[in-house]
Length: 191
Image (cartoon, rainbow, N blue to C red; front, side, top):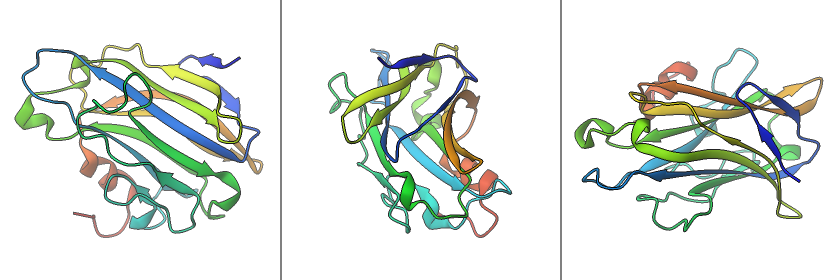
């Protein structure tokens, strides 16, 4: 049976091949489709992105070490039919040894023009699924009221004593994808 996580709760992963699924349901009647984008940021012990190709998102679907693979963008949230809107497959055995943490964030594309925020989104979650058995291991449902936030860090995988753990984060930002790049990338910003 899956563990229902609370904000800040941490668990041991104990698996090598997992899928991180992210899901959400936009409220009806906002006038525009919602394009929410899941991303993974692979950072080192200094909390910096290793290199720009270790930022996994809709324009960079696979990490250079082959450990992370984004299954693709769902530009309007309508193709999930109640399942994960976007997912990232992970093989923890392949992760570059310099990666100490992987942040999972979701941002709202074109939020300013469309006047959208996470207050207009419901049923948001992040879950961990055993890739081999397709069994859900843990799930964190965001129940905070993010009324002005446009980017949310849902959770993070992190390495302690060579063991991978997961923490349910639920941290909201008034931010877009560029914000997260600037926050974690020490080199030239990707456009």
